[in-house]
Length: 326
Image 1 (cartoon, rainbow, N blue to C red):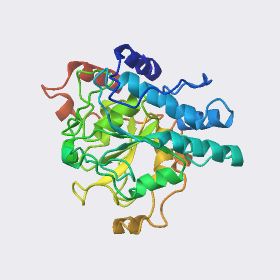
Image 2: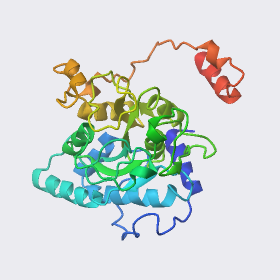
Image 3: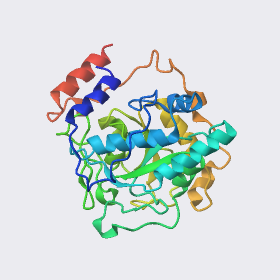
């Protein structure tokens, strides 16, 4: 079964969302000639250029998916929606009408982990005690997203204080589940971002990684995650866990989308001295390094100490054994 088919199966868990959980239902837009499920950044922007979809319609379509799937299925990845997302989309549509060009991420709907400062949008780090706190400024990486034309749609649930790489549970939002099996975890601490992207509630997202918090959720949710080398991305505006190890990076459904997101958020930031190490060494476009057959002939090692452990899921072990023989 391919990713698109598995993604569509999430719809089987749909139900009716309580009206108080999210804003009142907005009028349905004209039916666009575009489907957000399993789309890519390149495909979305091509559709915008071709007039098949507008930024406003994209936001409405993702909001509709959030209403349909996030709470009714108990996925529970969304902490708070942005009240300005539709207005931001309208401004980007007007800009495209004037200029007929798109910024690197213009129109791309993004979910941001709830430990990134977002101006005018609640940032809680998973803590009920911080409910309602709205930073005066964006984190450096969030600012880069907005400058590139991305639309911040919502903040995602996370392991409280970003402490757990195993599961995503917080006092402000409860437990987030895995969209491919709601009885399983999406890992942590960026499990909310990963679950939302995997369920097509946003196109791409930002997570953070101190010990495994991007890599684990990427693995658990069939995504691509990048934990950047320390100094490649700024930690400014990210609630610290371990300042020596914290890093922020992308979560996406494809390598190309993860590389495109990294291209935007990487770079020197005077507010984070450690990024001086990357000054002048950051690539403007990491997608240029993508090779379609880059893994052809590659050998993948199997760490027997872990794969042969008694606690290993037998289905996962069998799949690993089968793939290692191909």
